[in-house]
Every structure is written in structure tokens, then in C-alpha cells.
Amino acid sequence: MRAVPDLLTPFRWTMTRTAPDSMTAEVDTESAVFAGHYPGEPIVPGVCLVDLVCQAAAALGLTSGGPELAVERARFTSPVRPGDRLTVSVSGGTEGEVRGIVRHDRGVACRITLRAGVA
Amino acid sequence: MTGTDPAELLPHRWPMLLLDEVVAAEPGVALIARRMVSAGDPWCGPGGLAPYLVLESWLQACAALLSLGAGTVAVPLVGALRGVRVARAVHPGEMLEHRVFIDRSIDTAAIFSGLALVDGETVLAAEHVTITITRRG
Image (cartoon, rainbow over all chains, first blue to last red; front, side, top):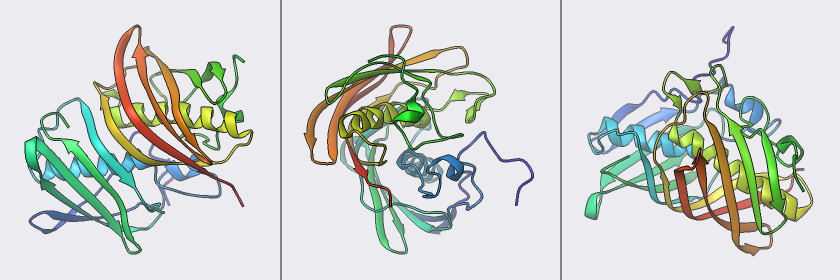
């Protein structure tokens, strides 16, 4: 357990590459996020999964890592909880899109399409 | 209604409550909320509040409007996003003003659109955002 909670970054995603287009990451059970999202009902904010896909896409060289965030489409289908082991699959789509799918042990958590030129 | 504490409308708490004040609202229709970004705030690093957290703050304004219409504080979950752009991070000393509109409501979900402004500059534009609420318990 940490003496001082990390309040700079909601989740410091540590990703391990498991395939050319896939990475794994684990949801930090100690993240300070869960104190407030939500008390008694910890759920990873959907925006943090957008951040995860952005980071995975950048790590795989599919995006430039610029200052702008552009989400073409995203669908969140199953909440992500503390300790979940996530698999992130990212691929380049047509017309400069990047498509990401985040899965946990219970199935697909979300599908997110970013605009590659800016995200 | 004006000047409402967002904590009365949202289940979010420190360090994930990213709204300061609801400045105007018409239940079921539209809401304006503000967030002053300050150094030392949670998640405000050297680069300011990152774009995905600017989006979280804006989504909380949507959830506050949904709670107003429902007459209860419930757990909101983002269901879908379409056409959402955040131009940049927001820096300490900048005031975010969120303007959110309900385009359609269906039972315990609603579809929103809107903007976030910093001193008249559009830093976020969202075309179509679905948020659902689930009852606690």
C-alpha cells in the first residue's frame, strides 16, 4: 500500500506486448481514482480506457501522440473493475482511423475508434 | 436554478469530482457548469489537465443534468461517444465552462451534445454522447 496516493495520473498503465497488435495491462487496485469513482462501487472511468487505447496505439507506433484527443466512436459495454487484467488490441483502420478493443476476463469492455492523425 | 454544488447531483467524490459549480440548468434540457483548473488539483500535472480528463469533467456535467431530470443521485456510466474532440489540455488558472444539452432521453439514458469553453475558446466539442444511470443498491 502506498504511503502517499498518486494524484498526478489516474492510472499508470504498464503494458506488456503479447502480440504484434496486442498488449496486456492490469488495473491498479491502489489507484486513488477508486476513492471517488465511486465510493463503495469502484469502476474505472471510461475516459481512462480511452487513455489506455491512446497509449497502446502510441506504443505500437499507430499514432503521433499529439496534443489533441479525437474519438470518432466508442462503445462501453462492460464496466472495468480494480484488479481486472486487460487485453488491448489496436489496429490501423481505413482513412487514418485507429481501432482499439479492450477486453477483460468477462468479455469486451469497450471498442474505441480514434482519429490517428491527432490522437 | 443556479449555484448548485455538483456533489448534490453526482456520486463522484474526491479525487474524481471534477466540477466546481453548476451555474445554470433547465432539467431535462441543458446545463452549464464550471471547473477552475488549479495547480495542486488532483490530476493536474505539469502539462495541465489532460484532454481525456477534460472530457471526464464535461461528462460529469452531462451526468449532473441527467440526475436533475431523474430527481435522484445515481451511478452514471458512459455508454457511447461519437464525434468527440478535445483540442488541448487545460492549464492552471484556466476556467472550463461546460455547456451540455440533452438531445434525446430514453428512460434512464440520455444522448447529449455540447461544448467546453475556456475564455470563449472551444476546447471540447461533442456531437453524440450516451450516458446511462443505474440505481444504487
